Image (tube, rainbow, N blue to C red; front, side, top):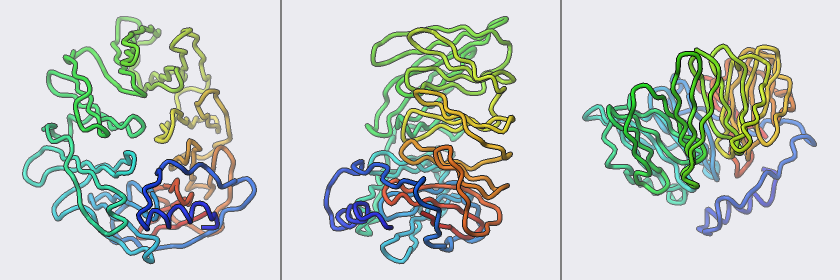
Length: 357
């Protein structure tokens, strides 16, 4: 990588320097340079489909559809190490602070297991994991949401709704479940809603201020998604326009583009991105920013709050709403990911990973 501060930071970490993992910011100015190929490496399980890829420090980490988690060490010629044990199927990986957390199904029953790997230990080739949320005894079907941005899991049991902290390793909140309500958790807020005769009643509970606010939207359709971004409720009802409601003023901004065909929440900050059928996309942050997005389907990742999209149709990379041409030929891209430390971007095809910068 051509950025000395990042390379030095990685070297210090490899040598055991306990500096902050969050000290790096977005240093690469993509607008001044062009996309170049850094390397192409083979995957361990060549016939498996990668469903997730990301990076931290000197590691590239992947999850495939067979449940294998593999890390590739850039300091050791991309030497691969399989993290999970035999017969263990991992369904999800998330980064929480300096750790990677995996969610897998037990090989002995139908319950799910949460394991934490410390990145600093992986750097010295110590493959040690710690089971967390040991009191969570549920099947995979009860796991309703994993919010990487808030580091929580939302669990729906037959009689209760539970919110557990992956960061603190304990139960944060528990509520009696009501069959007529649907639930979501976003940015420290519990959102629950109910369909009435001609409208939808949405309640937003702020745990910090111990307050509850109610909003009514005229529709008989189901809610497609809703979340909190920068003090605003972003809600999309099936068949309707995207709406952004200020939690304090109740001011409603309607994005009159219909229902988004794709919607992505950023993991590194309170922001999101929607792709619409009119050939545009919008970034929802403090403001709503529109950009060109003409293709049918995109893969998504985010780097320090900057959205990164890849279009398999036009082989176009969009970084923070600006298009870039990929300087090599690709076939079918499975996933896109990035590394906030090295600021490399990863594109995956069947059996290979492209590393670009």
